[in-house]
Image (cartoon, rainbow, N blue to C red):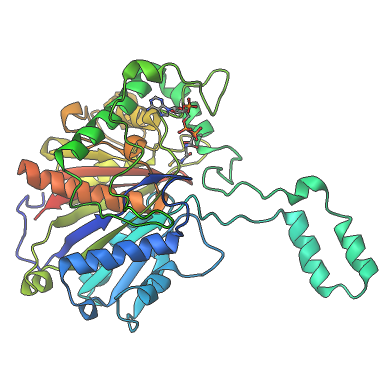
Length: 436
Ligand SMILES: CC(C)(COP(=O)(O)OP(=O)(O)OC[C@H]1O[C@@H](n2cnc3c(N)ncnc32)[C@H](O)[C@@H]1OP(=O)(O)O)[C@@H](O)C(=O)NCCC(=O)NCCS
């Protein structure tokens, strides 16, 4: 078994610092800002706060889930628009649905571990107000054809192939699974039925998420993790997440109608993660380099495991497969875990994962374990709120979770946190965070 010691003497790759913008509901304060602007804003401020000479940073891995039609490489555009040196040799963009900023982070960690870089910026962002609205396939074919059409008659003929319905932009694919034709919410409703999850339990998870996030904000937990952002036309900076409810009342949740299965469903606006705008960034460095620069690392990603299942089966269950793998790689068991940060795509998906981990049948048949993995202690679960309350700008969520997990470990003087995120395409990640 691997040592639980914080360091075995090797020069580890350290998470030095992280920062995010407030997470704001789609259509609110960040309506005028693009994903790129949010990304550049947070990267500039993170570098400024750490006091690191930007020339020390030689790589940038950044991600967004909803692609832009205005550029092809977010990471490179971030480099060009920030204090980062334009000679940064590695600036590439990643996307892995809701796991995006964890993928950015592990890519950077591997590049540093491999000796390619000493210091890199990673992170992710998404603005649901900066969506790449497209045109239907039929209209695309007609418009492309018109560019080559020789006569007015040719153009009229092409236009006549388009019906009024073809003029409506297709819904951006943030929620629809292309391989199944169902939305993520519909898939989650299928899982609710498989696992027999009650609406009351989902509402309780969502209420807890809001209550804990509101308490954390009130106590100042987020003050140094979240930067103020001035977004035109507003003069005042946005300083806090605006989805968190300070007055969450459990009885109000039951009043809402289901959204994704209007007749028999259980998922509502209150127990689903909302569409959100925001960005988050992390500075990652070879530990010796960080210490030489006088920086105190926050911690490490001790292990991680990406997993994937059949989308038609249980779209959001993949992280359950990653947990035993990440724990084994870290040389730990669930008993060693002091905190859990679980992404809440839907309160229902959290409930299904908790059920899976305590199910002997699931753990034996699917995880190859001889015993159920066990219960996750509610007292140590998403203690500062989760994505239902804080919001979920897809590309930024992983970085948010890494930062708040490490900060909370330090606050409690504990060592290990388990982090899990489910993602579109039936993928997921589980990782072990370790405090420095
Ligand atoms: C679920 C979803 C459709 C709801 O969107 P919406 O209708 O814009 O939601 P709103 O914020 O307007 O909330 C609807 C109502 O619920 C109420 N509500 C929301 N959260 C509440 C809470 N915690 N307590 C009480 N009421 C709440 C709102 O006040 C609002 O009430 P009103 O109609 O009287 O004003 C949208 O958030 C969504 O698509 N989420 C899932 C996104 C997704 O699939 N992501 C991928 C997962 S990773």
